[in-house]
Image (cartoon, rainbow over all chains, first blue to last red; front, side, top):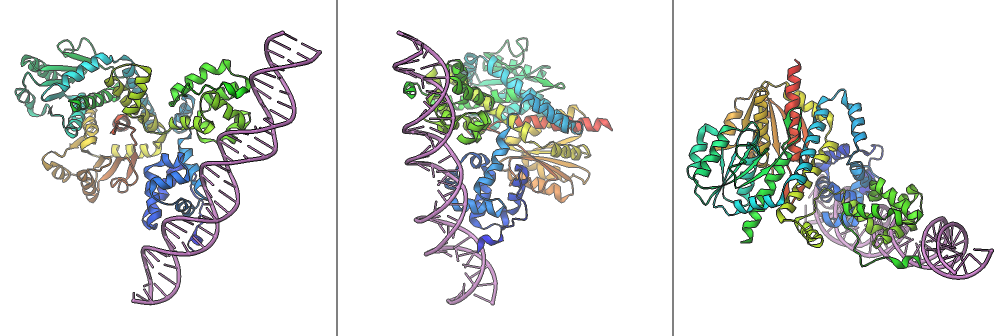
Length: 281
Length: 281
DNA sequence: CCTAAAATGGAATAAACATTCCATCAATGG
DNA sequence: CCATTGATGGAATGTTTATTCCATTTTAGG
């Protein structure tokens, strides 16, 4: 009988990380259908947590009985028992402030890196919350219009802003939006911008202290009558006043390091909105 | 008959924030036991999400039938129907653009690009909240130890991960941590990694679909006995199993675009923690 | 290629569950 | 203080769900 070699003496893990490690370790030794369930479980933990045996079975392409066998092969009593572990993982997912402090006190003294993580997570959350409220949708729409109407979009961002423009260049490439990533490498920026035409647009991203190359590239673009959209952190920014549309981002910081979460979310929004608006035509 | 005045015409909310608002608004008008359930629901949303009618009833001090009545009083078909809304709150998928558009049309409102922004903001917030809870501080500490102990840190990340590594290269440069940004430009990656020594470390970042260059660079580093720290999204990732320490990041996505907020926060944490640990010595 | 053991699918079963119903209790208005 | 209406508790019910069992298929060894 196949079910005979269940190892009941080996206690099944009650916490998710241990369970995941166990599943991953046993995937290669499991028969076809059980392995199929194993990989599904690791890829869709939420489905296991919320679904019924029938729904999970259908979704993963096996029979409900296979789920029970899989659970028992890992040492659990049945699917329900296994499911409990997947649910426990989600239980206090949004920890209260007190819990967070407690957690820090327990692990905290030893792990300063855990503290840093919470700090940067805080900064990211505050930045995003701020973005939601402060960004004017009308200006956002205008920026999207300008960029969607351009032949080619030139992405200008150096130093801290370079990760943002490089992401946009990547995403626009995948979405078939023609763009040029203007990087400062070997002073090529100035040459790249020489090709710009009045039917193109520049997206310039810069925060204090404003990189002089970004500012001069923005001016060069203006001189060639290209449209200019700016993302920056203050109305006093040298690229705010000269822009056709400018978007304000104020990132929260932790330990002097400014978050990038809000700028990144805005970059994604712009990219997808531009691609979407072009698709309409 | 008491049950007669259920307003079936008023559609019950399908998203948690709206439901919470509805419950809060109706608490004062509800009879004693139903009000009791209402306050319990607002205080223990996780219990409603995971529990059974019987368990929730016992925990909140009412009868199961009261839970059904409560659900129906809010316009739901029954307890199960209400429970779905509490569960949706915990799933890590952000409501799609279409769902939001529909909701927007009903409530009348803003611009569509504003809608995208909210969606990406949601995804970012969820990702960061998830990171807080799921990342094991012990593993984080180990990763910091490894990187802090290295002569030179090689940063490997392509496509979606490139913005992350490029940020780290920038920040490490400012913090005087010696690092090399390994980019795929012109296939230079392989040559760059040839200089690596056993006293160096590689930080490899890759998400599905895993870029083959990143994987082979990680293997090359191992072959030269350098330490390897991985940031990836699944235990099945080809760079997870071979790493000395691996950190899991699961970003929420909106419209198929995964957030980068959590990875970015982790990148900042690592960078600052490594610089901090070096400064101690 | 044949045989034995293991794995699998699917129907049968038993347990758990939400829901309904009804008797009892409390509140409200006359 | 009584009568009527609404609210509540708890048992009964019918449905959904996990689990078990067995016939059939697949795999591995000789």
